[in-house]
Length: 202
Image (cartoon, rainbow, N blue to C red; front, side, top):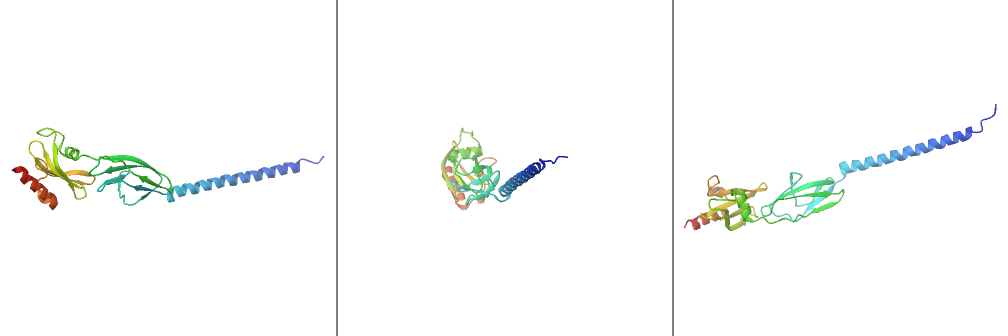
């Protein structure tokens, strides 16, 4: 029987193949470990921040429907968020902000001023007994959270509204179905209403 001269080469090739396979398994396993660590960090540890500028006083700001404070940057997970802003003196605003891991994203909305008459008509209607309402002597107070004025045309009716919980509410208006108790108003607002009533009653 002749000796098998190819056996050493076959064994050597098998050994090389086994070593290559081992290295391949090690590399793939290492990649999966790295990806797993990155996913863990991104999911449980990785955060980003959003800073807010150009936000009016007394605004109510919501991030994905949740009320937030914007005095300092807030910490969030990377992603896309919906920001909505309700302010006493500006039109309602909504936009999206995208954040990246370990970065601070500045959110600076361009807000449009809301006319005082638009506030009034949104509360009492755009058509009154004498036509489209007017608003005279409009005045903000209490950090823009209170609005007073005289509603016309026709009978001049003192008016007061308060901005709370992200929207305006009528607090005094001499018309059926509206509050008419000055004792429930801030002292300075009540004084304005009483002065207007005395003035326009003449």
